[in-house]
Length: 140
Length: 317
Image (cartoon, rainbow over all chains, first blue to last red; front, side, top):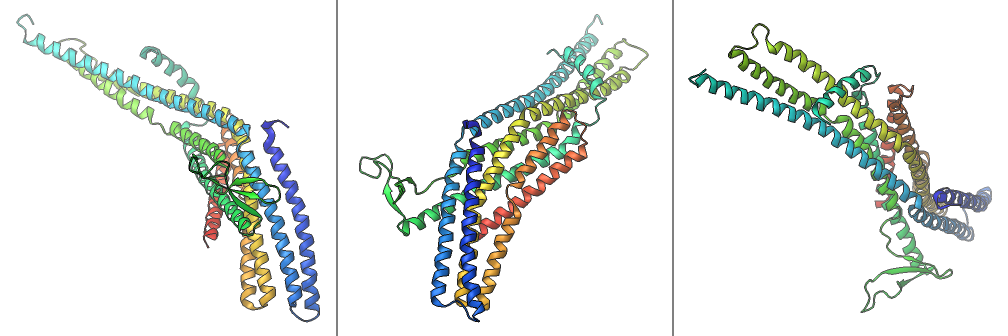
């Protein structure tokens, strides 16, 4: 499998392992239930020997779960370091850069309008000044 | 582009844009909601990353204390001539080592989601840019100057009969309308282009986030299921009401987590962005349908934040 689809491989391997763990947990739980039911049918709580066995079985479940937790942790690190993440990041950076350019274009339109307003204003002021000069001149 | 050429193009595009069904303003709420939900999802993933790292360190420490792993210096570390002093935990059977204090587990993944968050914020900035309003202000200022100019010319004997302000007012309205249409076109083009390019990236990224969220949920499941088993052992030993109540509480907490599905938000992210991108490519999809998909994403993002907070609080206990 190529590195591009390593993510799918990781997910599949963890799901398989999780499925296997689930089977093991249920088997251990079945033995736990049998001990408890047998004590209840005898009209009592589990005796010290049975309690010890229950503790061992639950510890086995916890230990098997920890193996899966370690597997998940290492696979998350693998997933995090996969080339596909680098490629997706590169593409998102490009898209964000283009969007920032679009925002710049919008600002450019504002600047064009601002320049046009300034030109009109300067023209109006210059004309007014010329007019007042003409009004004050002996020829006018 | 010269101002004259820009002016001509505004009128041309205005004709096209005036027939489009949705105005750019209609996209403001869906896009800003999309951005807010993505911000919440990114914060949640950051928090889940920290939590899973903490859980792993706690498990590692427990294995060291139970002599299943031994603590060693990393190769060449922690001596007088070393450049680092790092501790590693080495498995006593497989001899494999790992750092005792990893900083983060999925830092690059969270960075990728932060980029999608930045993208959503950039979309919001485009849709909210008040370019048309600013251009209108400048146009009105320019037209005011032209009116003054006309008044000056009139005063000195030119242009008798028709007031120039009559023309400039009508012309100003036309320019402002055309500019508004042009800016809307620029914005819609930008949104359409960006969402089209981002769609395959976000689709694949959200599949990866979904997978990561499922993986991240495993250590939490393990922690919660171990808590249920420990409470069950305590009940089997004590066989009293207090230990029974504790068992019920632990089972309920685990059940709530199992119903929550932290990965669902990334499915909704994919669907929400897909609908938004399709709509911006002139798809037949209605805007209310897009808003519905984004609303579902917002709801999932809120749920995820709640789960993350609950897990964080449970971790502190």
